[in-house]
Image (cartoon, rainbow, N blue to C red; front, side, top):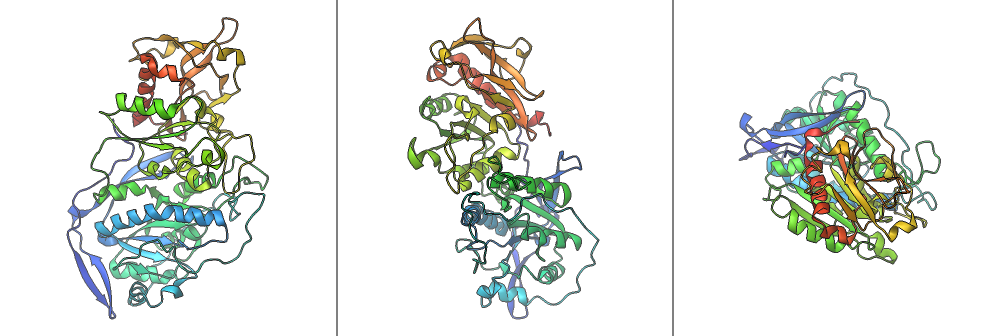
Length: 526
């Protein structure tokens, strides 16, 4: 099986050339054709369909530009979201440096904090060069809402300047540069001096400063530079619980806003790439090259905190790497806290077993970024309502009540209480016998202790694999199906009772669903 993200480096950069400019030291590089970095970037056509293509970067003619990673923002939640990017950004910048790519920090309004640093002085010492001619590039504005408090609509933070420097945990190394984000001439002079033709962007906000500052992608593209956005290391600032029309919308999350802006950038401005490609190219990814499955478990009703690790040990150990993220607890604040979700940065598959949790925005950023990007997803049982909660969502947290219809392409309508006593008889659908997810099952019919959920497909693209009924007097409902979301494969089963994991047929079904979702050859873009 092949991951949809392919990348390699023909040869690591072996040396750097020390360049002295006006008494300041800059680290440049000399690259041969063999040291090009090969990446797969993503764009969208005018219909929004994803187009992936291979591009080459010459490290000596490339730079990473980090926009406005401030220490504080006027919105408390957005401050936390910015900080949430820092660990992965540090890793990715370390990879860029190892590859020989120049790192340029561009904190607007705060360059005075760094006025005596060698990185700032080195940027200012670059000789004057005439700016390249503009090419008349224009693009539509990004989708809204824009610049709302992301803590939630009930108690918004007051706007005002809160930043004084970059985030203190963002590592600035020898050889890096610090530019004034409001003075794009500094970056253009660097590009002329080094013959840089490609800029990779990280930072915030992707719908504001990353686009519109003088160092930003619009201005640099208008000056003829190739710009690429590292899509998992940017965030938009939009809203939490307020839709584009300004009306309350509990399904509008900060991550959804960022996803909408990401699509806008890919369609109208620049290609994007994932940070894992740079980390992989630098030889800094795990030595184990098997596909990585991340399980997220946050439910207590069916004990999947025990059954899923047992399943993984028995059925996945030889073929895949896997990690588990568990909720801290099942009551109080602990039920809405799932640490370790940064693991999905490097996930090839996400497996959800969750029920009615309202996670903090920073944790949902990881999950939603993965899901909304159209990557493989498997869900079981209660994950039909993983983020649908009955009680009010706490400030700085989010829900996603239409997850079943939007992502799973089915509408959950509860269940008949009488079926809790009977379970259901399930069978492979006649026209699904040859589907890769079920064709390896030794038994195509079995009894499950899982009572059937009332599910109705809401999209023609849903393929029902298995159906089950608890009574001859009641209709059969889908218990396993496939769909696509934003082009990525989705497999879901409403089965998952503890006794199901003792049934080889169910284990074969779940394993088949995992293998099918990880086979990217059938990707479709909506």
